[in-house]
Image (tube, rainbow, N blue to C red; front, side, top):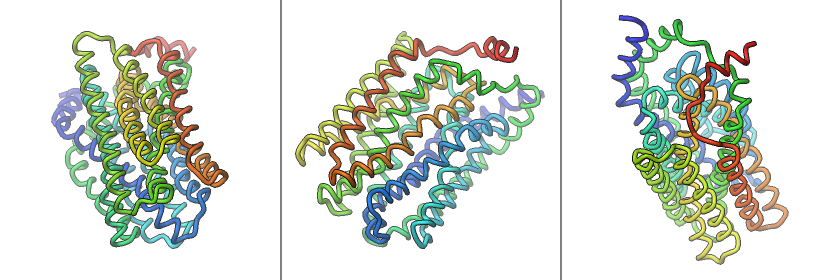
Length: 421
């Protein structure tokens, strides 16, 4: 049996478990990264932080998350998505757990930086493994599972975390969630051990790695990255500031915030799953991938921006409705950001493509919290922060509509040969 045959056999056996476990890892990822926002009202009061300082803590995660993303994409190709994912989760699980023991601002900042390093593994590895395990016409459904993870994670974290923190304190919840996160490694290693070993053997006879410069010269890469940045700016705005907005600006208790926030993220999850299923059905009925995914993306960005403006300019009731509209709008596009990249880049290029795209897309996680904190401190309100976020979400349409001519597999061989001359 050749190495490639062994690789295919091992991956086929692991395939039925890989996608659900990846979805669970993304769920854990967003529970852990969202803990700080959920604990925001408590940490802010305990450490006597202003909005700029809290924004700095939120933003710090993205400093290392963005900087290390290309490395994660490279590792997913060199040693495989299986092991890269395991190492990354071990780092971010430990960082979450240790945050519960942090003595002050500097310690929390350090563990947020470590959390960012670990969580870089999630999307390059999941995209790499989805491209290897899932046929093209099922990419929407597979990425819908990932999107369920990234939306149900905040829903779970805000709802249960908010109630638990209100009763037991924020430190205990960080320790509990970090310990539970590390348990994911047991089924993952047991399931993927053989597939990971045969992947490394197959690397010896595989095609040469795709150079980063082949990806960076693509207009469609930059268009998808712009759409990713704009969608992420809106999502990170909500996930980072929703608890503080509901408690400080609208006067809800921690328990009420947990209930409202949980349902908002459930709406996001339902939209992501529904959008993925509808798009897969549409493509299965004969629609072009580009038409289907770009149509949903346009609808998503427009509805998301409308929801943000409703919250910015409406009264107490309309502002809550606006948050749900925002969640539905931004949820629709989530699977297609990754499915479009997987179709364009293919198995050979997706690890590095997603490492670069996620790097650019998550610059919003650095800029957004700092800008939002400055706006809130200077104006004493959230209105202009919502308006700016709506504008940035709409800018994403430039990427989807003008910079991505079609969503079809790229012929990398010709480009790689040209670039090597």
